[in-house]
Length: 151
Image (cartoon, rainbow, N blue to C red; front, side, top):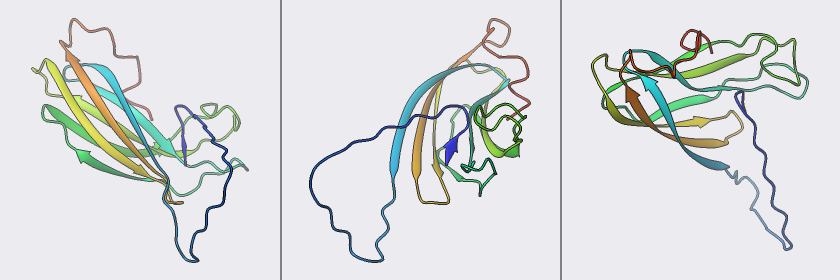
């Protein structure tokens, strides 16, 4: 699974031997904690997730599961296609992907928090926790044009 927005790869090399019994599958797991600023009543994209193979074809979409729902808004998952050019190594690909979107209640100002899990077809699991600061819709200029409408 490749998060379309950014790709971070880390590797560790060690000496030694690890024996895994036949038939045992190991799930990989990562956790991410971040913050976001949104305008009250406006939908904001928190992440985009897809699966693009080395041959620049779209693979099976990951499963997104909400772990902690927001207390002062709503969280939605939408499927769609990314515009060509969004993935640098596959500039002509309009990849299928899923976006996760947060929308605070119209009159709410303050903080909210959501947590969700992204599980790839290969078993890799990413846990995301996002602390959200909701600002007054008229006072906030944090919304990016068109971000609420596209993956």
